[in-house]
Image 1 (cartoon, one colour):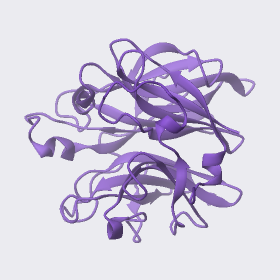
Image 2 (cartoon, one colour):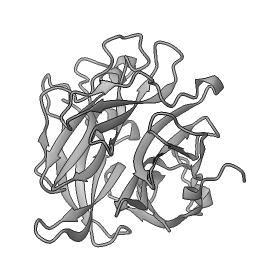
Image 3 (cartoon, rainbow, N blue to C red):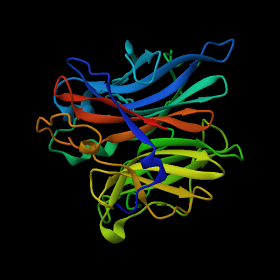
Image 4 (tube, rainbow, N blue to C red):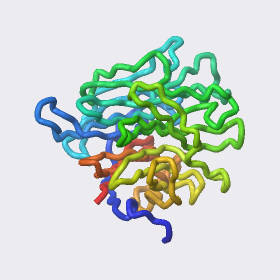
Length: 328
């Protein structure tokens, strides 16, 4: 098959992790831990989204939890929730979702999305329109996590007609070689063509302020009525790399891979990973979203991808869990 990336060719399926009875599991973001004295502790820590009930309840009652294992493939021990909605009139009162964790120096940073759905109904499309991006920091992956500021670290564009004037979600952080912090994000261009696209906002300090790049949206497949979401960005061998979930460029079940010399101008898409039947013959119980991996996140080691973690519908409890693939 044409358009298969080298990244895709290097993937080896390991299996499911974090199959938790009574929970939906999504957005599994891994990182190696530090023991505070001698460097890496050898443990793999995962920050993940979890919620109860129907799959769609992620938008109303999701929280971020922590788990730890000796190996990326598990088994994992869940230690508990580490970030939950604040309630009341806070911008992140209800759902906390899309966690993505990185270690910067001797601390950990967690970008996430939150919302406030006070007074909204399921049939009200504005329920999704309150999603914004926040930031929390901690000395250890298991926390305690401290939110940075009382407002979103990246809010929707104040121009409601802009491509990112409705929501900003799917945060993906890259520390640029020049020291800046580049926060890639997805927006739903609801008031124009209705398609999902990717852009970047840049800050000199982790805590912001983040300024949108004038070339946004950087990744825009509207010319072929395609969309994209769930980016993870890294820099390797002098180039920028991004993996995302395809929403119509090739199909809606593959992942996309692109690279760039500068993080702004991206090359032609290739396939980052295939649909799930390519990797496993696990029976599919007829759930929505099954047959594809979502929310790709990387476990990095020495600046290179070592494992790919994704969300995957189905599993032992017919809900959702994480899945792990090794990058050989």
